[in-house]
Length: 222
Ligand code: SF4
Ligand code: SF4
View 1: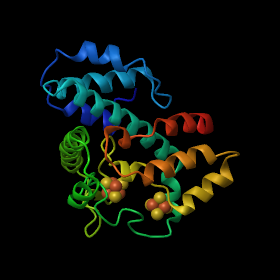
View 2: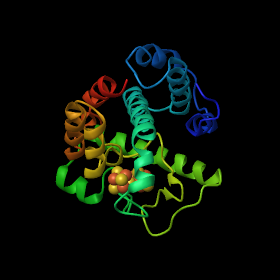
View 3: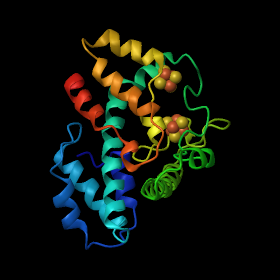
């Protein structure tokens, strides 16, 4: 666990609302596989979010924590495998694929057309509130927004690390897919799972994540 990590700092900044659910959340969530995170990082992550969200309904709180651990793993993966290519040879500078507000999880059109379940709406709403908090913390840490693109795009990249939208965490442009194809022997299962997740319309809680991505990524990258 790296105490200088910006994710760690943001989690430590969260207001601690209620400690009563921490043990139960830890017991339920800590044993799952998180191949891209060390056990101390996972425990700290669960404790901080559990205490921050301790007044929420149990199912929503745990769904939010599970989603953030999923995003954290994909974030770690993208930081180590993809970000350098984005910075060095993006075909769409200066904002790349961050030209519009892709942090929005459910737009009004999505809600009218797809009619997501109440659970999916509740999860999207809670994640959106946490996005605001994470974004504000990034700005208060001195990061500067890049004007005219996605509202979360700072000069040095996205202000969101744990609460990116499903649309953002599952997107790989053609250039990145080609790069992974050149660098690895069998990236197919990982790329297929990412494409599948990226094409999903969110109607249920399950549509926020594709667990096969983590399995395929672990086989490919670890
Ligand atoms: S994923 Fe592709 S389009 Fe997006 S920033 Fe990276 S290189 Fe650019
Ligand atoms: S939320 Fe972040 S990753 Fe997604 S489009 Fe905006 S700046 Fe890019």
